[in-house]
Amino acid sequence: MILSLFKKLPITLSTTTTTTTTTTTTTHIPRQLLRPFQWRRSYTLDSNGVADHVRQVMRRVPQPVVVVTTSDHNNNNNNNNTMGSHNDDTIQRRGVTVSSFTPICLSPEPIVSFCVRVPSRASELLHSSGGMIVNVLSHEQVQQSIAFSSPNKSDQFENIPFYDDPTTGLPVLMGTLGSMHCKVAQVLQLGDHELWITKVIKVDHGVGGKHGKREEAQPLLYHDRRYRSVGEQVFMKAFEDSNLDATLWTHRAHVRMAWNYLRELGKEKATPVIKEVIRRHFEMNPTKQLKYHETITSFYIHLVDLALKEEQDQSVKNRDEDDFFEFIEQFPILTDRTFIQKYYSPKVLKSKEARREFFLPDIQPLPTQLSVEQKKQDK
Image (cartoon, rainbow, N blue to C red):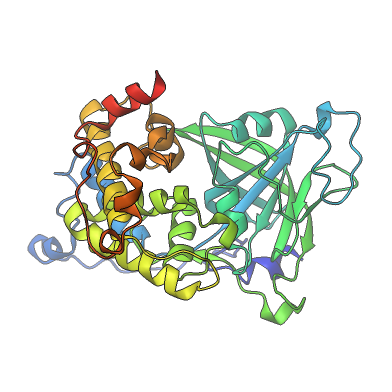
């Protein structure tokens, strides 16, 4: 069963093979002929330089999107095991969209691994539980991937179809390609991540399609882009393709999109891209009673860019620069839709001219230090 699930993914498995000993003849190759094939920069780059080269390689490698779910079922005596039981406050459930999911071997028993960032609530609950479900998402589960990439959301399972396994009480996502029930074998601390090596106990095959047909099931993948975290990759793909669920298409989502582009391209190149993506989103979603607004868009691009520059200057320790949610915790003012009203009057914002082209503020000049404005807001 597990082998048929792995066949759908762009990954290879380690299997037992028979080794045959053969006699080979070693041919001496002149040193100067080998030189063009050497990794000539490998010994001159610092760690950041090597990381950049790793990103360049990995951006072209397709990776399956996987959500690992767990709960404190072992410490809870009131597990009712009902489908989608969101209202049971006695059970703590967490899910995390993980990177570096790898099937390690099938024999003598199936073993898979995945990485989880630390510290995190997901890591704490995984250690407490010892059991987890590895859910392999279908290409139609973009929203699930985004939901579980948010570490600060109190109820990650809200509006997510799932059921609690009758035997283990662990939450299993519905509509996936398949779900692997696992227990921990070993956990290794590697930098700012933990590598979880787990044994697969059983597999539930899903259908992964709207019509419940196995043949329509395709995995959700991310590849061939700048190497973002898996949650950011899926989020941006949904935004750019204009198929982000309407319930997730919020002011915060726009800020998140701008944050991604500004980090990757810089303000000059990112600004026209951000505006075009937003315009296309409005055009593709005519049912939403919203229209593109040049002044509002430019104002918040300015704010996000300010925050990114201040973040670099501050060099905050123990902060993951690739984590949007930590970024927002540092600059929560960016999620305040009313903040713009301190700079623009309703008359200007409601004008057709301000919608078509950028207008400077009529109440006070554009902010130059977002941290200063944040302190004012906090008082």
